[in-house]
Length: 111
Length: 116
Image (cartoon, rainbow over all chains, first blue to last red):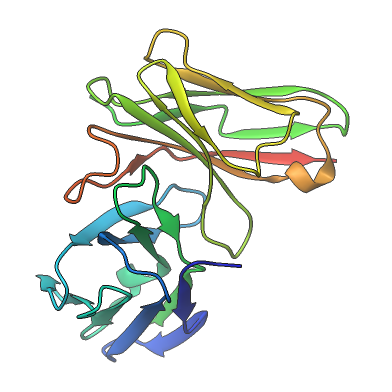
């Protein structure tokens, strides 16, 4: 059983469209991170959120941590082909020593 | 620093053979993690080290798996008597403070294992 569920699992959109990816759990996380992974490479950290309700922006990417710290969303504005990749959320529970990864959302942006 | 380095990038082995992977973390990072990722899934935790001490192991890490970090620098992950179900990407990550609120992992590019 996966601790973090991501939706949608696959997403294919046209360049310039907006999209939102969701990361949900029944567990409370002390911090939550988003990574992007390209084929054949390791995940690359995009952002860390730690406070319930926190919103962080990274250029065209907006990340939000749920008020109860059980869920998160990633919104991309005006998607570009370079945004193509596997988006992973990962959460830490309490003072635990590992991050639990979500199931991933595979995004394809068509030029 | 060139980041986290993993070798080899690809490994094809016959079922029943032993394989060993190496990970060189970022030099100032004292925490080192091994994850396994199968196609279409997120990474699954295998084990982690703080310096040379192996502090946690997942149930996924059967008796055929062993990991070491002898001097608190590089780490090796060995799989004995490989099975087809071991085919996956093996990812190594390091971090300076473990699971600290504001620090994430720096991952290597992974070792893709194919057991035939």
